[in-house]
Image (cartoon, rainbow, N blue to C red):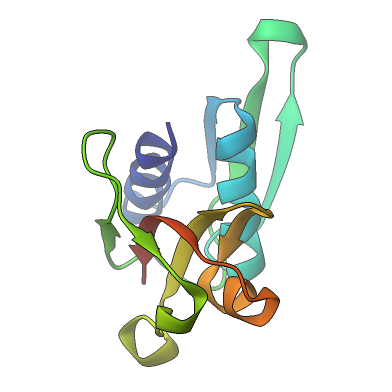
Length: 123
């Protein structure tokens, strides 16, 4: 799940590790792509075949992960319309949403005019 993936990345950055491996899922790959676009991860690659697929990431990006706040949990899901999307930490953070157009950052969702389920904030 994406929460475990983010914690792995954060811990690897704190321990000054270069790469991290995590099990592959489409949701995790979409989250990694957003983190890569925002500079928290340098690059990522899907390796393996079939059920043995995994994501290998170079985690020493431009930014270090300072904090994470999960907004939706499996038991309590929170939704937000595109008009209510605000910046995180005065623009230094990123909001990640699950929308009908896929997993998007808050700024991209606002540009496209779609809301959705809140996943997490990262700064």
